[in-house]
Length: 378
Image (cartoon, rainbow, N blue to C red; front, top):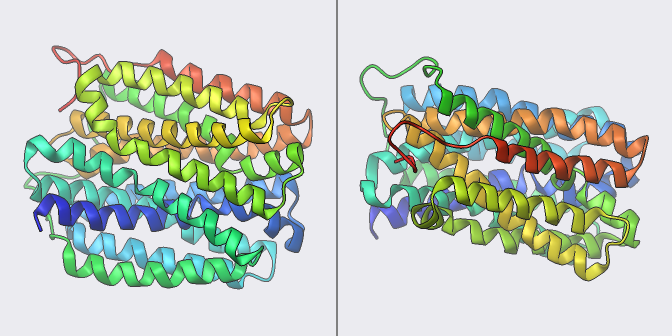
C-alpha cells in the first residue's frame, strides 16, 4: 500500500472516531440524554460549548506536541483520549460528570488533526497532499453517518452506543501507533505564526462558519424533533443524511484546484446557510429536513477542507500549525455559538435562532484568501 493510501486510511478512521463520534454524535443523542438527565436547552448549550472549548485547548497543544514528539505519538494519544471521554459519557450519572466527559471527548478532536497534517507532509508527495488532507478530513462524515444507524439499531440506548464508540477508539489508537510515521519537528519550528492579512482573514471566516455550524451540530436533533415530532429514529436518519452528504467533502481539494479556493468557499457557505434554514425553519417538512441535513454535511466538510488547505498553504513548512489556525478558530466560533443559540432557543424561539445563524454563515463569505501573487494556497 502506498504511503498516501496508508496514511489516508488511518487518518480517515482517526478523524471519523474523534470528530464524528466523540464530538458531533453528541448532538444526535442529546434529546435522549436530556430526557434522562434533565439538561434543558441552556445547560445543553453549555455542555456542547464545553466540548468545543476542550477542542480549542487541545488543538493548540497538539500543534506544538506534533512538532516536538511527532505525528505517531500524538495521533495515538488522540484516539485514547476519545476512548476515555466516550467511556465517561456512557457512564455519566449526572449533568456535571457528563459535562466533564464531553470536555475530554471533545479534546480528542483537537489532538487528532495536526498530527495527520504533519504525517501527510512527511510521507506523501507534494502533488497529492491537498487531496489526501481533504480526504482525511472527510472522515468526520463517516463517523457521523455511522452514529445514525447505531442510534436506530440501539433504540435510544445512548449509553451503550458511546460504550461501543469507546472500544472502537481504543482499537484505532493501536492502529495509529503502528502505522503512522513519526514526522518529527523541522529545525527551527515552534512558536506562534507571524500575523498576516491572509491569516487574519482565515481567522475571521473560520470563526463565523464555526459559530453558524452549531445550529445543526449542537441543536439540530432537538430543533428537528420539536418541529416534526421526531423521536430517536427520525433524528438518527437525519444524522445519517448529514454524514452521507459530508462524504462529498473528500473532493474539496479537487474542487479548489479546479475552481479556486475563494469560489469554493463562497459557494459552500451559501449551501450551509440554505441547509440550516431547510432543516430548522417553521415550514420544514421531513423531506426538506433530510435533504437539508445532507447539504449541511457536504457544506461543512468541504468548508473545513477549504480552511485546512488555506492554513497549510499559508504555513507550508509547519503544516500542523497551519491547520491549527483555521480549525482552532472554527472551534472558538462553536464554543461561543452553542450557548448563544441555546439562549435564543430558550427565549425568542427556534425561528429567530435558525435565521440568525444562517446569516452568520453568509457573513463568513466577506473574508477571502487574497495573498500576493496567488489565487490558491499550496
